[in-house]
Amino acid sequence: MSNQKILVLGATGYIGSATVKTLASLKANVTAGVRDPTKVKELEAAGATVVKADMSQPQSELAQILKNYDHLYVVTPGHIDRTNLAVNAIKAAQEAHIKYILVVSITAADNLEILFGRQFNPIEKELKLSGLNYGILRLPIFTDNIFGNAEHIKSHNTFYGPIDGDKKFVTVAIQDAALAAATILVNPSDHIGKTYSITSELSSSDEQAQSYSQALARPIKYVNGTYEGTKKALLNFMPEWQVDGVLELYKLIEKQEQSQINHTNDFKTITGKEPTTHLKFMQQFSVAF
Image (cartoon, rainbow, N blue to C red; front, side, top):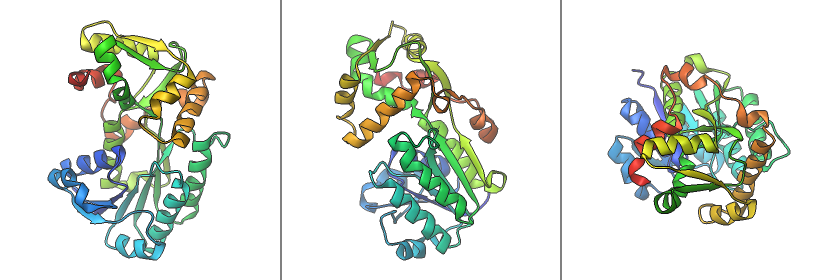
């Protein structure tokens, strides 16, 4: 095990905290960079060090913190200004002469017709021009989003979405994204200049319903709702700009656009493990449903 010091910036979100915990379980020397260190007791409990460090700090101030670390993971935040925040982190990493930087992006980063593409594309460009040893982890829609339908599945054995049930699309389990990132950060030498798309499964909502039915041992049904209804539901979990961005991804799925249907072997190539299917995911978390 390498004793390189790893900093995860943006460590309180789903991806960041899962990666910190995975790194800690691998006995890596991991530090969680967070805005408010008093709110992350579970990361300390997992075995990580916690420091105050976030992407909104002035570049030179953030660079002073980054100088203490070898490898950096920039978990691009779910913030409307995320392009500038992530670019600030990359520039601070340049100033700090970080040995390796890994940055979260999305599978549709090349599509400038959608909001998320316009946000992530400049981040990838900045990273490639930085002169740093870098890697990019592109992620699709999360398998874990099914938790947003947990109450409907419990009460009505039903989950909803705005697209036809037979449209296939790729998803990634957050635990798979975390293991891929952790594996790279511990030993990045094989991952310099690489862009990976981490996908766990390519399946349709109807096929996911079959997996959930098998895992929960009762019939679970997918119902194709409206975009308006989906927007209303998602506004309970995220701000409107982000909801609109997610709905654009669903429209790409409807068109069967390549970024939403390209299932790769990158997860297995990086980790040597099989990804988490919807069946395995629901078996693992069945108590919530």
